[in-house]
Length: 129
Image (cartoon, rainbow, N blue to C red; front, top):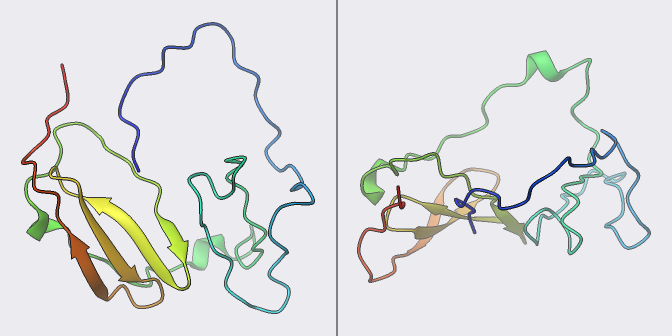
């Protein structure tokens, strides 16, 4: 669920355009106000990180407010390095990894309510220096 290793690629990278249209295989736009899911790392099998949602734009971005917060303090010490995960959203449930022991939590995506926790039984994992 997370990537913490430095890139081994070298040389210049091609930058993708900021807004590229999705391929025909992407999920349909949210025209009816339905939720769009994020079932794969990067959003889809091609990892495009594209969302067809259009509720947030330049005219209202400054008016956004936090919908909910989830306190991860009960899941052990924080990682000593920045550790970012890409949550998955399937059927209204947000799945993500928290804490240095790599706990997985399932949260109600609308309310942030904790639904369940899975704790691996392998202790703390530290990043190599």
